Amino acid sequence: MDLHHKETTSGEILPVVIIGNGPSGICLSYLLSGYTPYLSAEGCHPNPLLHSKLSERPHLSLLEQDLEYLCEGLEGRSSNPVAVLFDSLLLPDSDFGLDHTSPLEWRYEPERAVPHLVLGKGPPGGAWHAMEGSMLTLSLANWMELPGLKLKDWMRDKRRNVRNDRATPAEIASYYEHYVSKMNLEQNFACGTTVTAVTRESGQQDGSPPCWRVSGLQRRDGEILGDGCSVTEEVPFSLLAHNVVLATGTHDVPARLGVDGESLPFVCHSFWELEAAIARGELDQSSDPVLVVGAGLTAADAVLTAHHLNTSVCHAFRRSVTDPGLIFNQLPKLLYPEYHKVHQMMTQQQHQSDSSDRTQNLQPAPSSSSSSPSSYPGYLSFPCHRVAAFRPDQKCVLESDSGEQTVVRVSKALVLIGAHPNLSFLRDNGRSLGINRDEPISCRRNPIDVDPFTNMVLAADGPGMYAMGPLVGENFVRFLKGGALAIAGDLWKRRSGGEDAVTPDSRVDRRTDARVLDS
Ligand SMILES: *[C@@H]1O[C@H](CO)[C@@H](O)[C@H](O)[C@H]1NC(C)=O
Ligand SMILES: *[C@@H]1O[C@H](CO)[C@@H](O)[C@H](O)[C@H]1NC(C)=O
Image (tube, rainbow, N blue to C red; front, top):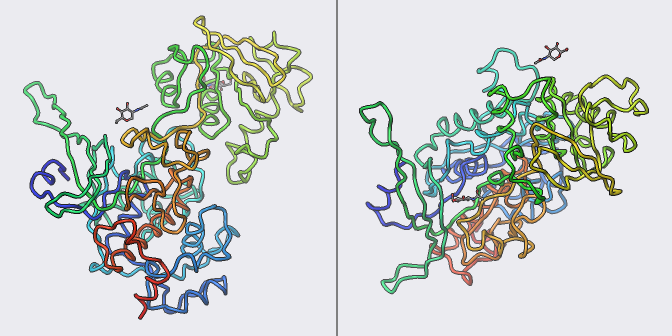
């Protein structure tokens, strides 16, 4: 959709603008397009209490139900109560490996549709298109799926033999893109956009109510010139909206260590720079080691990639190999054999502090705890180590918790320690919206502070700002659908409560509202 055109021809105030077109934005768009979940007539939920609560008002859709009431007493693997509720309704008992049928039925009720726009940088699917590495994704495939289209069925159509329940990031991205067209959501999506500012507009004297202004640039492919090149121009746009939803994810800006020399050219902060170096033929078995910093899954992908090339690897990370917080200690071994292998490498081939001279040839010390010391030649792990500095002569100074230093000469250093969202379109990068106002927003440490049952941003400049997905601390697709339910439910309740452009004091109590609708 061409936003510049939209703005100049209408000047209308849109009910909802969603910033971000990953799974969060797609799922919310589905709910706002009139697809509505109900308890089905023969629907039965394995949790008897939840089932009896749902059966109290079976004629009401989930959007109209009192979510707080339904959530009471439920427990699950997300700290977000609505996420646990919706997950347990979509995939009952899936944590126990049971394939219980969902008690929900989806009805298409176009009269409920709320006009909305979803803005995204690339094609629908968001970060999944840029997801690094080639490893199978972390979650079971059915946990990645969105309502109404079974990922398994779709994958079965795409490839002949589905070996297991997991899919690659490329398959997931392609599934999300397909989902948007199959569900007829395309007309709500504006791609190629970069949002540069979201501000609160006060109401005008002509009676127009206060609302949000969303401004940015949209990429537009121009005409093909005589030499066959096309010119891409960036056209500014500016939209008005009663409600704005922050759904950008948190993968924009790679995290940095903040140590000396981190900007030297041999230090990289993303997996694709490793792939690019491999593609240019810069790394092989005779190269100096690659230093991988970090103990997350992207770091593990980098270790495996370099190891497959027979390039030696030094792997430094802050935690100990037995730390329960380490992701490898939380993944079932059978389901994730390749990550289990990395964990084994990390455990078996630890750098011995009394043999730092050995780091140059990367042979594990004979005293290593490994039963077969040469099982992973060319790999050495440095648990409980941090990088003290990178030096211009391509040497890295690693320091252990006890203060001992080891110097390694490397061909490349890959710092893969997570990422932050880019909220530069909000005042002070959105810091004032976080649980801790003094720190940058991040998924794990400082998510945006929202009402748990509506996902309304508590410290926003005005009403009608929502946030969902990794921005509110939810990293798994499986659980971010709960945010979509909370937001769609709140929008429905506010609309039914007679609010068009909502002001803070006109927010209706949810329980009263639900009763009004019921009578
Ligand atoms: C790495 O080394 C193994 C064993 O020497 C060899 O079989 C393999 O082909 C090598 N791989 C590459 C990419 O050079
Ligand atoms: C954040 O996004 C803005 C707008 O797209 C861009 O100009 C800026 O460089 C980005 N910041 C970082 C740190 O990537």
